[in-house]
Amino acid sequence: MKTEILKCLNCNTYTLKKNCETCNNKTCTNKPAKYSPEDKYGHYRRLAKIEKGEL
Image 1 (cartoon, rainbow, N blue to C red):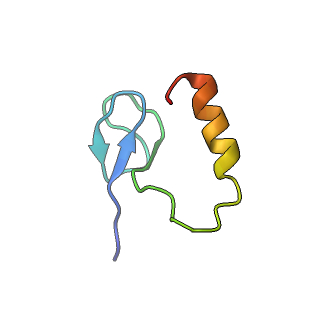
Image 2: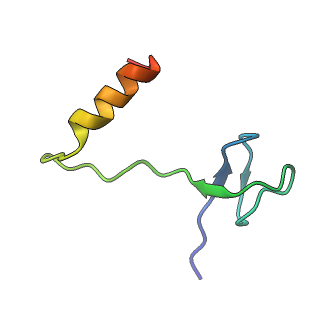
Image 3: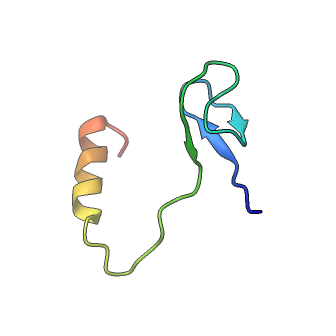
């Protein structure tokens, strides 16, 4: 059986369950997106980061 470590985006805790044990929010995987040299949506992702002020 394969299990993945999940992360709660609200309280930044790690767990193996679908919902966080401390704040009861949904958890998501902590893996980065797969890299591709032909990144179709890279331009849009960079524009979104510029709007948020991350770049």
